[in-house]
Image (cartoon, rainbow, N blue to C red; front, side, top):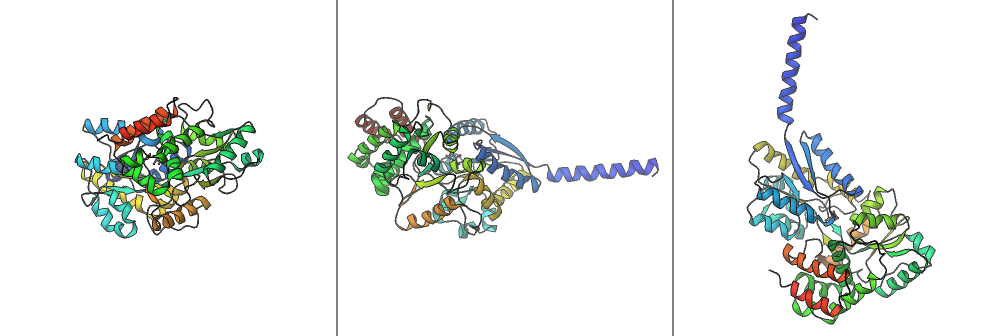
Length: 417
Ligand code: GAL
């Protein structure tokens, strides 16, 4: 080729490339707190799918289980007038952000994808602010699980517990065998996670709803609440001395490695077992937290979209929302995350026995009034109330506070506006 031609064709190629770049150079910044092994694998699938659609992914990951640090980072960015394109926000706090007038309307994606028809109403209602979709749900986590290493049980001569009494029998045997009975991380949100499962087991779903959803003072100060704290105090005696500040996934690792027998945790814990190549029903067991077989505490993760000016980014937000709601994404994300799809129409074929149990139990508990929002995971009450309640629980876990005093403080904290 003559030099002149070569230069000409090089120019043409460059022009083509930059045209392609200007079409594809849309960048979205996504805030989340999915940084553990299983979580990182899950969110990577969304990144991959968005990049395949020509959208550049700017990861805004803020480590810290339960998302407290992520919320702090989000507030700072919104106050500074530069919110991310999307953020992992869920439950009633979607309404709180909606009131600030910072969320974007994604009705166009919802209408095209027929979201109203493929989401249970309990889910779609949460994703809307004043009747308009502002967030897309990625999953449904169940919180009231107990994760068990069956080898540890066998070594200790213990049986899978279904009631609190059986749980303490198993815990005693594991302790006697020289292992940690209860893997736990001493962080307020983890303390609250155990607490709500215990409250559910001790009092049942009606009590749970009255006390932790409606914040009814009679339920909060009842003998059942006193028993909940007594039970929690008993559980405390099976937690090892190094638990303070430990991340939840490190506690799960103790169960995976056989250092500990059991952990109270939502099914993001399953994401860790799966990432470690462990098989449900064989290497690990998932059973409802003692006494909670007829209840299901749900925790729905979602991506809320923030108002942005650039029309190309607005379009990318709709692409993100559509991708999140696609059956392909809901399948692969939830296989890694430990949760189940939020939408209907996703094949069950690849899901393990824990996920299938979660799907079946969600339906069954819904029919008998046992499907309840997780208080510890921002589904039930506003952030200020949840924070005040979690503080009391954490104080109880980290001191010699009596159950009676804890009940009084809890009832007071529930009055937070
Ligand atoms: C929950 C969240 C899960 C998981 C967990 C640990 O609140 O819904 O997706 O990330 O915290 O960070």
